[in-house]
Image 1 (cartoon, rainbow, N blue to C red):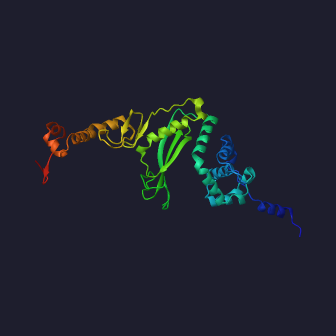
Image 2 (image 1 turned 30 degrees about the horizontal axis):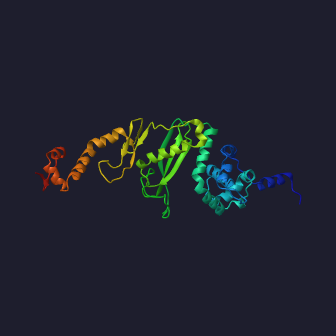
Image 3 (image 1 turned 60 degrees about the vertical axis):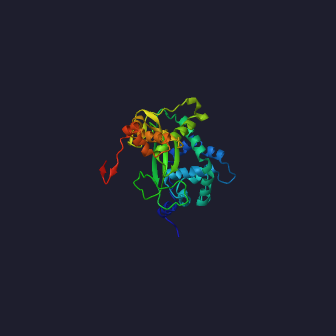
Length: 310
């Protein structure tokens, strides 16, 4: 039976599978400029038929274009032009292979990020004059009983019922390009991070790839976890435990000078007096206070009996 031209064209059109191009022509040149595949394979070489750099390019494009769980990447791939571009067949990209690739990459993830970030700084001439640093939280559904990162903590998502991780990020001022990050346990307290963050930033800026930029960080503003404000103010070295207390931690953090001075002026002086009094005698500290006129005057103690003052 002969087929008319119109019927033939209709059959041809319905048998053709459309392919998505999307933003691939924009994203691939960026990944090439960062030398993502080359750097990945240099850090984690392999003799497999698919190198780790190919896998990472594929997963990044999937995450940016049409995020899928690992088991969905194999079905998504043939709907795009990537099989021809990356020389990858859908049958090669099954979830277990992708998962094993990520497991192999994980120990080198920090170094790979640092190399990519420094490459981006040089290629795109990113301005590091001002960096903005902040912490946020990402919550998860599920128990995550074997995770060292997922934990209950202060939830910025208003989900105290869910476990979370804390994400610390430095971004550029002009375009908010991330240059440094850290994934932290979900119960990390903000006040514990300024010093480790500055140390990590110094190490990053000291990398040989950035030596020609002569970068030196200067802290110009500080988000105070007590006042919930980010202002250009004087900062100071704040001890977690008053130095008057012996045999205690000497850990310290960064704090606003006005906040640290307020607590020092209103609270720490009394603690220091008590510490000094306890060091001067082996007797009961309260007996010492009442016997010493100077201590009594400075502390003004009161004794309450049945709610009354005597």
